[in-house]
Image 1: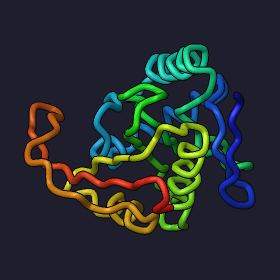
Image 2: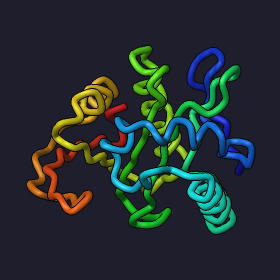
Image 3: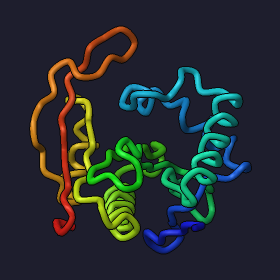
Image 4: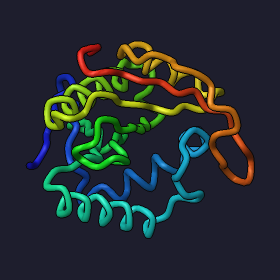
Amino acid sequence: MNNIIPIRSGITLTPFSSGDQNNLIQYLNDPSIQANTANIPVPYTRKDADEWLQHTADLFHQHGAHYNLAIRHEQYGVIGGIGAFLRTGLQGHSDEIGYWLAAPFRGQGIMPEAVRAFCQWLFEVRPALVRIEARVYTFNDPSSRVLEKVGFHKEGLLRKATKKQEKLIDTYLWSLLRGEI
């Protein structure tokens, strides 16, 4: 399955491709993205981009679909990313998502639309999926607002749940159930 999910005029969710390295390197070296995500290397290099693109290709071959998608602007190329972690496998009842958006494109309503479309797609293609979770650092208010706009519910505070650069960080747990979107 080769997914292309429309978001709005000129913006789609698509698989990552080999030509995306420069945008990934440019945007993922943004300190605000690095501060608010768990696993993006600092600095983000061409090697990191190449490894990520290979990882997404490997997952496609393993699962037959892309579960990590680029947020693609028709003029500017990749401007963000969104993905499912597949923690309980494709037949599991729950999953977790993560996402990022390049600074020049924030505040335009793109991310709530992308999260909504991606979650709808996940529920469509994975019949056993009942619950989608997102974990957000307590200091990342914009990400919490995105989830709230989509209809996620804040379930609670996970104290010192994430280790990042040798610091333990509090995280909010958000969830969306099938039928709530």
